[in-house]
Image (cartoon, rainbow, N blue to C red; front, side):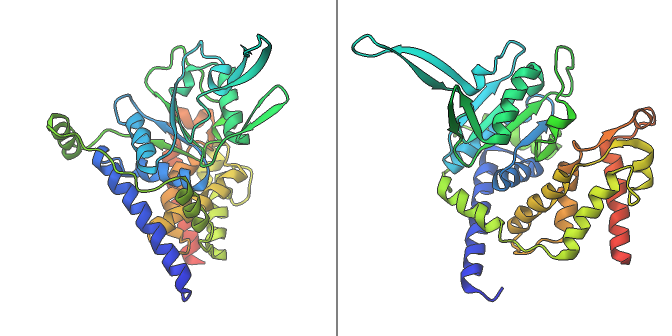
Length: 334
């Protein structure tokens, strides 16, 4: 880039994001892909679904992010008896000084910048829908009044893959509302050792605020200026088309094992997430490598497997790996 202003803006955004990651690293050991994914979703204006067993630091991550970025944080523990009003809020009757009755809207926990929807698959479909509607529309309607949710607005939903009794799995159409689905894995031996060392340390590390709401929105605008070359855009489209079993561009395994491939939202998400990743890596242009890096998290919840896939032990990960390898090989030949 020859534009000095653009270079300075780019470097400032990169420095800010690096500072955020350093502060998060004071509290969260490892989980680099998870931290990166949550930051990408925040700057892309999307939402993230985390899947992993309890105790891997999912709640701590979002709380740390709220302190580092000076954002309002709320946590909703999903249970089968949770009602939509418990999330979005409800109208309440109040009396003024003269004894007159009036209705006032009591804001629910959804009115925050960072919302942790803990174990979202434990709530009934009606309650899940109330949350997902607020996520999509960025508004909450009560009676005749519409309340705007303040930007930035990120919902980080978690679900436990172990216990499935008494749960209500999210339908595929609602899973598509999440920009990314990230699998949270166990820490390595070295990471586990560092976690225990921090637990027994005398002094508790405290993250320092390095960004605020205004700087986050500014950084989001910088991400939207990241250039997307035609061949990179075409690469993202090819990946999505290769997952759609009824398309002529479909991969052979997609025709055999995928019932429904990625929606157009998948192609949009590949480009949007890739642009943020490019900026985090210090570039003002999107590359094929950026697309490949975000593709598993962006697409794993957007493809629906058929019975043969389950019978043959196929998973979204194995199929996406084959699709990405094939599309990359075709692009390099072209």
